Structure formats: structure tokens, C-alpha cells
Amino acid sequence: MPPPIYLDHHATTPLDPRVLEGMLPYLREHFGNAASRNHVFGRTAAAAVEEARERVAAAIGARPADIVFTSGATEANALALRGTVLQDSGAHLVTTAIEHRSVLDNARRLEREGCSLTVLPVDGFGRVDPDELRRALRPQTRLVSVMAANNEIGTLQPIADLGAVVRDSGALFHVDATQALGRVALDVEAAGVDLLSLSAHKAYGPKGVGVLYRRRRPRRVRLVPLQEGGGQEDGLRPGTLNVPGIVGMGVACELAAAAMASEGPRLLALRQRLFSALAHEIEGLRLNGHPDERLAGSLHLAIDGVDADALLLGLDDIALSAGAACSSGVVKPSHVLQAIGAATPGQAATLRLCVGRFNTEGEIDAAAQRIVTRVKALRAAR
Ligand SMILES: Cc1ncc(COP(=O)(O)O)c(C=O)c1O
Image (cartoon, rainbow, N blue to C red; front, side):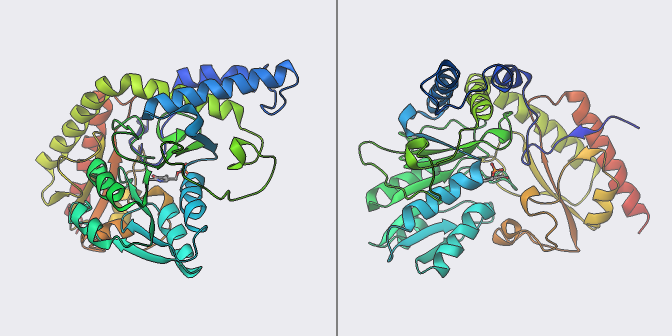
């Protein structure tokens, strides 16, 4: 059996060994509760949390006090949407058709609870038009939520342009930057972002920890917490802090910021190598998403005349996905493919591949070879 190859970095990323090294002391000897400030165990944990807060803030151009640790981006998205919109019964919320379910489902729930909702369409590449956003805004618009990078097709949004539109309107701007962390430069000030969600496990950090950036200055974003409890994280996310996870998130952010300049071109070269190898051998191969405005490592492919299930069944030694991992198991074309007009169930197989930090050229060549062989075998058997 050839070794399995991991090309599913949109779903999750492996823990960077340097992140694990940073976390280990907080799983072993420094086990204190960060809220126990009266003794050295607690103070050691609290100091580590504050150091991590500084590292995360530095990675997105924020102030440490603006960082709220959560259990991941799902919770950060829920806090951003529900925490702002629930305060205002007549609120209008704007989001896009290709958001992650944790944004879209919260938006729909808020709509059922009485707020009004606009879901913006995207173009065939998955991009939001700033003029379309401007037309959707109303005096009652409380929040606009747009993802920085899509988890399925890899398309990047013009966040700074959209931020300028939102800022002119006086609404709040939330960005789900889960897939962008470590892959795209993020600067909350330059992009006019008021709220921003992150997740450690998409950037070589541990699972179960994330962040909501919440602007405090010059205008303070008021948030209603999702739960009540011990008052941690300024009362916005009560619950004992996941100190090892938070430490891991801090190290992951620091590594991401330091590696971005060199990692981006490397991932782009690997992705292009993979695409060229596949396109050279497979007729009827199409790229979904934007050709240029996309995450460096990300490929979303449609292969005409091939059954998706049969293709995936024969490729179980390559970690890839037929759609977004978070919604797989649901047997309908993904909402993202529908939104870009690329849902062709039964006529084409779709593959989502994402190259990451530890992939080698050898793995890319081997993966391409296995996919080509499988597609040719399926076509020959028709
Ligand atoms: C764009 C996006 N937002 C939010 C999430 C949810 O992140 P988490 O796994 O940290 O809850 C994901 C995970 O797939 C994602 O890709």
C-alpha cells in the first residue's frame, strides 16, 4: 500500500510540531486555571493566555484587548452574528450565498427570530460585487458578514473594498477569516473590519480553539454573550479557558505570520504543478472558483463524465473531499456550487484539494498520478 497523501487542508491541517512543543508544558506542569490569579499556577496560565492574545493580535493588526478566545470559528461566527443582531429587534443583516454554514444557519435562525436578512448572490467565480453590497444596505443594516476566503472553491473576496462600502454606511463589518489565516495578509484596520473569526486548526494549530476579534476603538462593538457564566473573556465567552489550546493558537498565528511570505509562493507552485499534471492528462477538467483571486494551495475541480462516488471510492489513499467537509454526508450539490452555477450532479465529479505546509513535490506527483489513473480507468469502464 502506498502511503496516504494529505491534500485536505481546507478541512483541517496537521499540528505543526513547533505548536505542539509550545503547548506541551501547559498540558503537563503548567495546568493551572487562568482565572486562579491568587497562586502561581493560575498566574502562569494567565500569563501564557495573555502572551497568546498578543501573538494572535499581532497576526491581524489588532490590539490584544480586542481578542476573545472561543472554541473555534463556529462559535466565533455565532457570537459575531447573534451577539450584534439580537440587541436590535428591527435589525437587518446582510451576508452572502457562499458563507460557511455556521454563518448562513445563524443568519437564517435570526431571520426566523424576526430580523430581516439579505443573502447576496456571487458571480460565477464566487465573488461579491461591492456595488451589489452597496445597493443591499439599508438604514437598519446592523451587520454585514462576508468570508475572506471560501472553504470549498478557495475564492478570495475583495474584503478591503467591501469594508469601505460597509464603513460608509455605518453598519458593522464581520469577516469569517477562518480559511485566510496564514494564507492571506489580514489587517483589521486597513480593511475596516469590526469583527473577525479565526480557527486554530486551519492554520496548523489545535482543534477546538478559535478567536473572535471585536473592535473596541474608535467605536466599541457591543456584543451580547451567547452564554452566562464566570465572566471570562470580558464576560463575552464565559467558561474556563482552554489554556494549552490558546497557547497553541498563539504559536500557530506567530508561525503563520512569519511563514506567509515564503509559504504562499511555495504552495502556489505545488498547486500549479498538481493542476498542470491533471489538466495535461484528463480531458474535460474544469477549475471552479476564481483563476487568480484564490487561496494559493486551493484547487476545486470538475471532471466531466465521471461518477463522483466511484472516483472517491478509488482514491481513499488521498485525503481530498468532494465538497466542503463540514457539510459532507448531505447528498445534494453544495450551496457554494449552486451559488456559482456549477452544480452539475451526475454529470461531473467534483474534487476539492488543498495543498499545505508539509506537502512535498513527490506527494503532488504521486497524487496526480493516482487521480489520472483512476479517472482513466473509470472512463475506460463506461
Ligand atoms: C470558512 C469557515 N468558517 C467556519 C468554520 C468552522 O470552524 P471550526 O471548525 O473552528 O468551528 C470553517 C470550518 O470548516 C470554515 O471553513
